[in-house]
Image 1 (cartoon, rainbow, N blue to C red):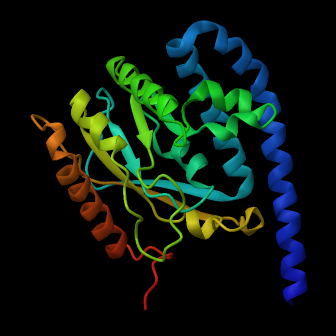
Image 2 (cartoon, rainbow, N blue to C red):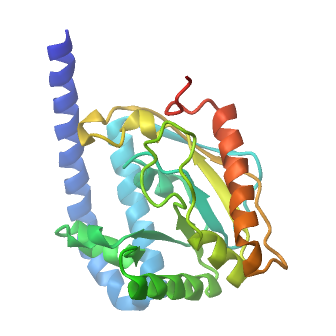
Length: 255
């Protein structure tokens, strides 16, 4: 039985990979055209194209997504969205979750090296190289400029996958410094099922099923100063941690 299940898992993964590449190739010429229209208009168009790619792929994979709003999200306002990070599936779920706002994601610069995908990626995200202080500062400046254009930013404050067995890893300061410096409210988001759809240890663990994103109440930064970054970071962490426990997130070690 185990051999049969592994064989079916491999067939499903190949099916997923084929359609991922196929849809990417279909979108690619339109991304190239959109890239000539600048970082704002062109970037917004590329995000729409990526959403269409994502919608088609997740439908073919049998992954059914649902947004849950514990607090409404104003479509006419910009936010800094922050979410937990436990899986490669977090990336496609971003595009299913954030539908109403123009958006840019802060993402790892290493991904731009992947052929074709890297071209799309480099024009759809604000790339961050945490190993280089100069490039890191440049990314922060880009994020602030984007927020001034009323475009929302999406950041994983944990930085890398959480493999601790705890609800969350420790947060970096970046998202919270940017929020205070630009006076942009933070909207915490929980990705509850991405770990179950594909764990962080293997691409081959991909499987169909449900996907949920929970939007929590916005956290205002109005009037806060940089001296309050630790306070803000702790507040958002505790809100997200408590809700992940309440929703019984599957990666939490119950011992």
